[in-house]
Length: 241
Ligand code: IPE
Ligand code: IPE
Ligand code: MG
Image (cartoon, rainbow, N blue to C red; front, top):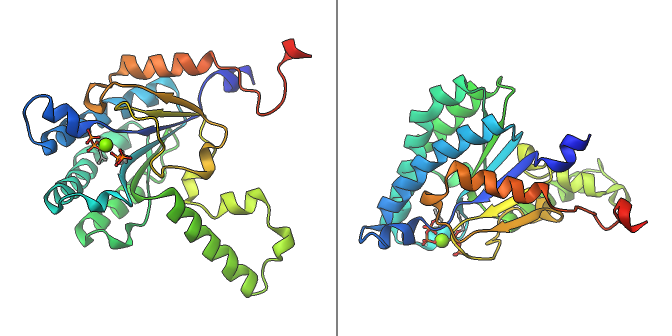
């Protein structure tokens, strides 16, 4: 399908730059997170309208616990408020929500909202929205490896039968699909432990634009850039034959 080739089905975004955005305005970092959350609403809606099938957003990494507890607490409250305030809109927009990451350590209140949001949007068959909270690419692999090892131990799986698909199927379910386009805002050119397995053939788009300034126009620019890529997956394109 030519459409599939030129349009990204799965877009992942590392939303970075909230703190700097606020500091540039002489405000607290938390103000940047608040503006960043407001921008998530705009971009989620736009991505759905553009026809993106899966959108995966990196909201909080396994390393972000190193931040001052005040900032961490603010972020957790923001996630909870986002899920509460956006649920109706997400249902109306036919978005299916999944939280990917180790949610077991999150507060009971947040876990409750996560469960409600996932349950109430489960029947939606429009865009899939994955929000990565307490997510780490390495941790995801460790988790998957443990499951595989247990299956081997229980005699359910022969080690020689382990394939790439086996590993993919043991990652966070809705996240397992390969990423076509990975966007990072905020000017850094690194992955910061985001989807390691799923981005092996992604097109990587790094922009200096800080997340609260990343408009729908910026998203279109990234998608347009993607459509101009020649994805060879190790092979050759027609003109090279
Ligand atoms: C990204 O913005 C949001 C999270 C990691 C939660 P930052 O908070 O990392 O903003 P900068 O990179 O310090 O500007
Ligand atoms: C990556 O941003 C994590 C998220 C956007 C959630 P960071 O700001 O935490 O990454 P580093 O520290 O610059 O690598
Ligand atoms: Mg950052």
